[in-house]
Length: 317
Image (cartoon, rainbow, N blue to C red):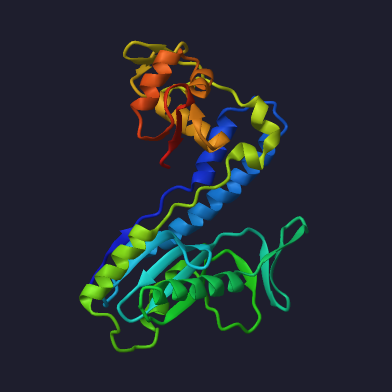
């Protein structure tokens, strides 16, 4: 018996980067509606994934198992699994989708067709192909570690209001509340991994995870690069323009202070621009002097390269 979530789900970095861009663009910038639409879509996807998380948080299964959410691994190519359910007998790859509109899954060619209420039609990659590819890549990852486990795949539609038309596919399409019964009805088979091997496998899955780093927002939306508003935002009132003083930062709008408001500003910089930050970049973005920038950068958990004037910093995100 084992109720254990080995890896929790975190808010996607892409979503955090979109938040930063929206906060730091002038209110009349033409790209704002595009960014807000992208943000709403990614937020809906994350919310859908959290619906499945609640099932695993609230339901106990009778077998030994581990659950890992949002796992990024590398086999012949990098791959990402929304939720992975692992037992000593089998593993299940769950792909979670929260897509608005009426959905139609076609087989030839494999594709997802979405029709919105306004009549707009758009095609997407096949959900079935996606989950099948992930199962194959996970199988290869297991084999490279001399692990042989049956792997099942299922697609979870986050909300029962989602409408979908399917051909006669063997890939299960489930709503979150059907996941426990799906798992309980999987074929009963002998335990293939002893306790030590199973523990090693789950630990290896967690250690092998490499968080997906999305492209910097300004690379995806180059039209905003020169319009980003710089400065340190106040954690209390969100005013962009805190001033540095000896003990931290003071807001010129609400007068509240913060010892470390710069941390979010530096994180924003990495999510927006990517790459390596120089002392000069830090001065320009935070509106501070070189000596302050050096102290701030050296006081953060950043990867340091080079020396003296060639020194740069990159982020462990």
